[in-house]
Image (cartoon, rainbow, N blue to C red):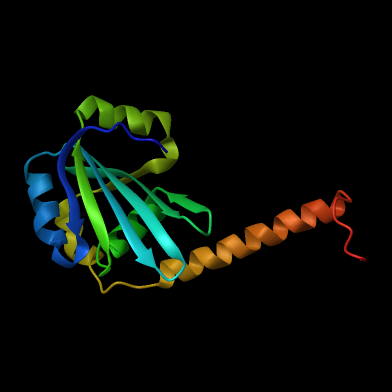
Length: 161
């Protein structure tokens, strides 16, 4: 999913130095509209996530496991993004959008929708986990198997040789 570039507020913030609680509280307090783009290096390679904010609330999310070719959206992606923001290796960029731009992104892709207020922040925070990555590896493997099964049924693969 492509997002408008928006106005760069901060780029290249190392996750080691990123204070999630402080940053989220500031964004909520300022009624921020825009997005956080994050990139981490995990066990299966590069992962990227986006948290879309509208007027100080998180309203949409997307998370992608590059090498696995798995893209999650909505609530699961929100959880993956919050988890990834607690990793040690990665960077965060923050871009400001207008309220209308943020609304249009959601209007054109309903699957991105999630709704979170910062007052719930404490219950999201936990130690970084590779569980989401492991679940996505299983999802990618089952997708690959089903593609092969379809090709076999269509006679496109000769498994006898």
